Length: 317
Image (cartoon, rainbow, N blue to C red; front, side, top):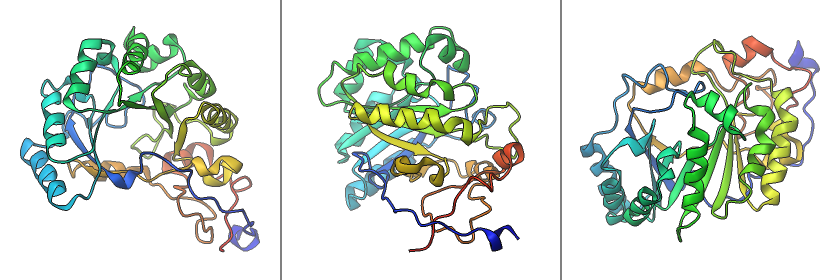
């Protein structure tokens, strides 16, 4: 019945905003599954202990493939906390030697508080650092990560990276009930960083059909804070990427929505867990022409409903 009375509206269509770090240019390998933080929003919290990191043989296969095909410009080394691998500099040197133009690590950044360690990674060829910043102040960040002093060390790491030529930093803030009110302040708190090129805001998903921890925030509550964060980041010259948020709600900022991801090389047992999220649900899905929106997920719908009177479908062009 709802579909028969809901008329799609005509939006001016916008392509995603330009980015220096196109997802299609990267391949991502999960090389480690241990972490020294206990972030309450960790998507692999329940599977970290049994997921298998990629082997060195698989790592070499990807390097050889790219050397032969030149399919990707960059490689991302990740997992849970890849800086805990003692051979991380060697992995970076191998990737560079095989022809990758860029080597990125995804990290909580605490170990980067050591300037000597930063130098070691930069000299090994790691030129991009994707750093998780959960909040704008130490009290909130440390509560979310469950480790006192985490915020100070992460911020010091980002500041250390500012001192190295040829380095680009990116940050990610997971949007939860605990963090969303601080999104604009996160942007302002990091405003002094010279090498921060991109800020990501990933709306939380629980890897489950329910929100057992109460971390999912209503999109309607998040919206004004998220849009203000986008405005502030762009005013500082940052690229912004928003993940897992309804495109129609973002208004003139909807070009920030970018749900594409690099090619991910991960234990295949991860995917059945991921599919429990149940993305792409929306009352307007059958006739909405939005192409990059993930809609709602199962846990969100169970908690907040369909927002049928607020979400607006895109008309076909």
